Length: 169
Image (tube, rainbow, N blue to C red; front, side, top):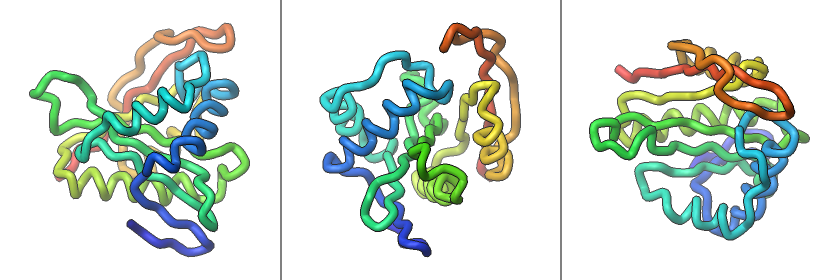
């Protein structure tokens, strides 16, 4: 899909990427509040997740020298048809590869893909202690539209979730 400098490439995910996607996601499940899943996902679950998405809700992967190090996804915001022009975003980068600009490039590619797919609005839900994610989203043009107070419990803490939105022209 896209080639970048320093050995980074960004492309559509394939079933062959599922083991890396599962590893990256499960690391986040076990060590961060970026997801409110509490249990790791199986390869079968992640395969079904990828295969069930359809062309309007793609998953992009970032690879460095051929190794998948992160992924981004556009997901349905709601199953109600009136919301079809809105997607929820997700972004995960392996902990060993964070703070190197990979997430920023991957997110920019996902936003470009959302524009190509004619979405009108993107929504991001970000946990209160994810300062780097909040910064990344604001730099990408998202604006804070609200905070859901104490809606999730992880690692023994009740956590707020910030809702950010990007509306395309």
